[in-house]
Image (tube, rainbow, N blue to C red; front, side, top):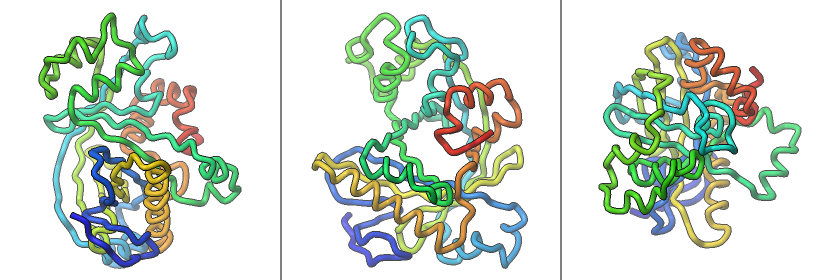
Length: 287
């Protein structure tokens, strides 16, 4: 449903609903998100700095507990010569996971626009919130088709071989890449907030290994109109940056998400591989 809003916290004047930037009939949605650090003690304090200010301007929606299990190929497949190292998914910022009972795959959306190149050369860029863009796939057939671009088709055509398969038939994934293995399992307690009447959603996560992390997310609906998609993505990024600035959130570079933090603590060889592959550098993380 289209809903026009006023500019809240400096955010663009577009229709938002539950953190979704509306505007076209496309079925494609892009997650635009930024993480921010959380001091666990700040959550318990009534004067918890920026976090307290952020929550004061938000409405709690839910508190849930879920388990994420992440998968990758632990050995380089023979049919994937362009990715000679292990873990060809995560080294390319592709995150295949099972959240509770359903499969999901987060695929990065690369900004190749001229404005992004200018932004990269901005000496003040490291002080801005790091904003990521992902398309999240949940239909197994879509996940298989996308992974085939990276992992190869293992001797066949993913679209033809499974043209008659159910969209949610997981066998088409595990039969095609039987060496996919779990490398990380995290249980999270998430408190979700609606920020200022649907401008964005706020997630506060506490993990089973004692790590706290926050995230601001705006969902952007796709568009086939030339240039419109990039404009929407830039609007969402600007919105997130203004929220971070308004509440003085610690959202600059070098913030590790849950999976990166878990692996940094528990699997140093894999973390070193991610560093060697350039994944950490692409996220502004030095080590």
